[in-house]
Image (cartoon, rainbow, N blue to C red; front, side, top):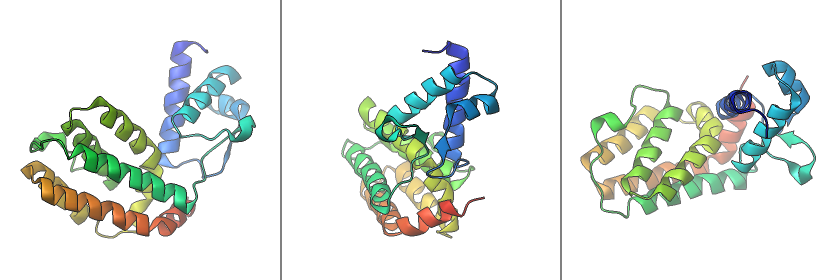
Length: 199
């Protein structure tokens, strides 16, 4: 394993780029070229890429190089579906109204969605829910970043979810979360196209 500070810097920068969608789906990730770009040697880049493979943010097909994942429509449906299943499972626990400060309403829709699902997972008091949602938030980040080019009413949609959660209205929250995921599952082709057209 490479030295801690350099590895951590490289890992965090690559993760930031992948979450932001600045590296195109399917693009190769060449450790030597990334090392030149980030001012470091091959080893910390390779180690960071291996860690990101474990987190599902990078692919290592047949152990033959690294690449940005290029999900199929079905794979993206599965990610959204899994996110919805975890959220609904978390809401089976007795629900407490979320404190007003626990949701970030003055940020971009992608960050707002992340905050909502992190808060929902935390309400269950189960750290496995929190870990699963943290990983899903990372993997869904580039697609959520493309959602504003597909859906024109994200502020209204997210505000409705936030309001139900802050009231502690479990039934309304479950209904809003179900609608949120069904809508995205139905629009995965458009979301993938919007991401492909970025930049």
